[in-house]
Image (tube, rainbow, N blue to C red; front, side, top):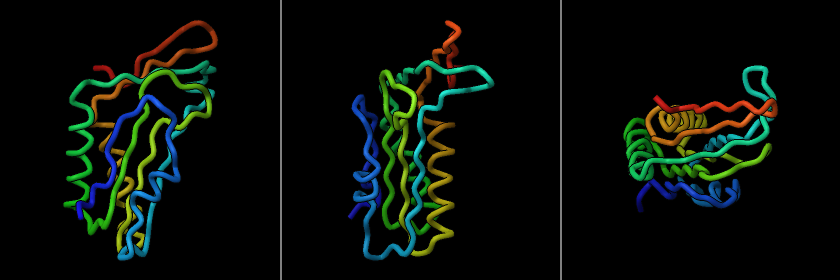
Length: 140
């Protein structure tokens, strides 16, 4: 069975339960989970909401990130789902989980997955502030 159980971008609400179920594995003694949510403040500015957009290659890039993590750690199962479209405060923006034989490996694999996803997957955030301003994040 492939260790990459879920690698998707979606314009519908994300489910922590779905991601945890995707990485369930009898050989995993530890499962680490990261949940990123839309916060109400950034850089001391009140956030009204945001929108994520992605390059057509983003799903492929996400798969590449997860493959790299699986090659680096003894991953039994790994999953990542990122939201695209308009999100409100409190919405789930990204959910990542890694299941490994031991907890330290699971934590390290999950951290590498979210860090590399943020750095290498072409997903861009357009943040809208309550003062009427806006900001693009992740756009070079």
